[in-house]
Figure 1: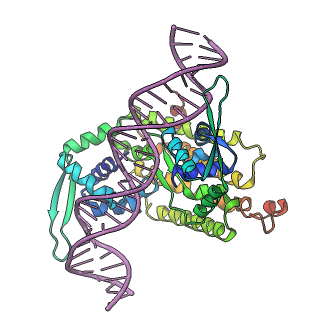
Figure 2: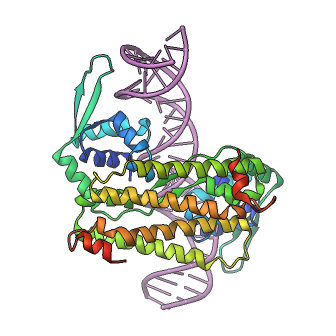
Figure 3: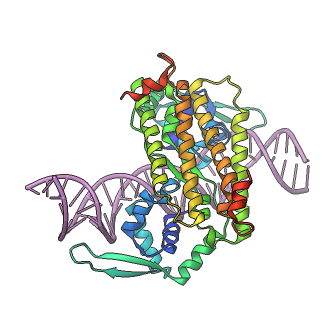
Length: 182
Length: 182
DNA sequence: ACCGGCATGTAACGGGTTACATGATTTT
DNA sequence: AAAATCATGTAACCCGTTACATGCCGGT
């Protein structure tokens, strides 16, 4: 699913600017199953506007640079619905970290540990973060997807904690303590 | 991580042809955190060969079209090691299915159900598949990554089974039911 | 005075996907 | 006889990432 469509989707939730849409990709519930940067969002919004799928209201705030707030049109909503009616593509996951862990035997021990801890930390943080934005005020389908992300991150954390000995079996087997320092 | 590097990595495990490398992406332990098609693998191998990172032995089998078996060189292994020594990029997950579930309210009920069941079935199959190729004859780091994939798929299945009421609340959405079953 | 956050955009580049092209063998 | 599997490859296209460019505001 391209960024154009995703932007359209986000705009069904309410008007937003390119900057804010990007924040939703970074921090919002979308973060866990998609990503997009400015370089793709701004051109996408421009194209959507050209095609009449979104309207654009330029709000010149005093002080701040002019904000462009986009709003989905009836035509845009229709287009998004049509897109959702198609069969979804398979998930595309690409994890460099897992590739590295797969080839752990070719890595420097320190680097391996650093990568591992970094990833574990990231998963913990992500799980925490989703939990923090959860207070049941959100619609159930949104609860589902954000809960899904949380469940996966928690599973990842648990698995990594329980199976680190498969990667670091060289020195003493009490890895839980060894991993904590540094 | 580009397909070139991934091919190099796979070739550290043993000689292989483009066709076989692709099978590893589809069925092997890599399937759960990366994907690549012919269109990227063949050019990648060609480039790697041109740069002296892999050797190529053409085996003309009778009947079958000539098979090109690639073999990593010392220079290639060195290059791969160097690549692994760098900091890994963040995971890039893109799941169209989750986007669709997020916008479940905009989907036709039947289609939603189809998408949901299809995905759940795929996760079950994937988890089973990983479990099937697991008989402990493989090195521990490989065990780690394939176990990781399995753990995530199992978590996904569990979560979907336990929380489907968040998406399909039309027929019997009471709290009673949610609490009683399973 | 400087840095981080707010705010928008463009252009080049890179790289993966898709579609096309070929052809023999084995299975149904 | 048709379909699936084995087997390799090219070229166009799509589209996302990266780097660059600009500029104001608020806090330290």
